[in-house]
Length: 113
Image (tube, rainbow, N blue to C red; front, side, top):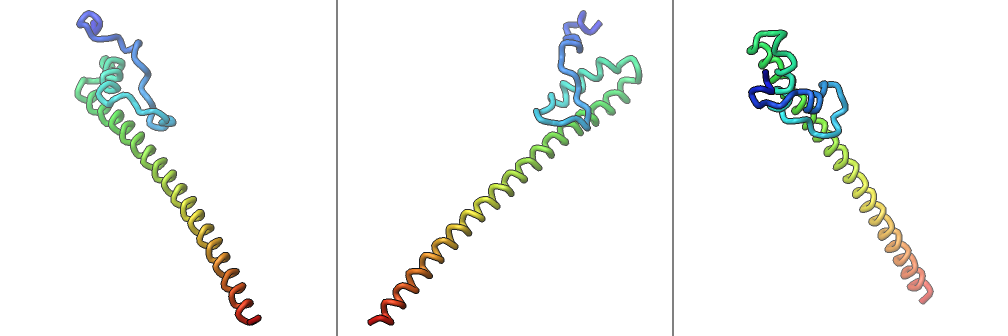
């Protein structure tokens, strides 16, 4: 019936993600996932209940994906920040050590005079 109306068959579309699945790539849009799931579950429940449930599930999947991406970005930034701080500290310590050695050398030369 759906194909007769010019709507694609749900078998040709990617499967809907479960909320617990690893979210390495962005989920299909909530609307597309909603349409896919609605086509599969339409006969099992009244349309309003199906649409509400599926909208909530697909929206949650999209939100979960964005939260996971935000966590990854925060972790990467934290790691890069720590690396930068270590480089700066190391550079500052090396420079301070160099200045200390120069000061000791200058002090030793002054004592010899």
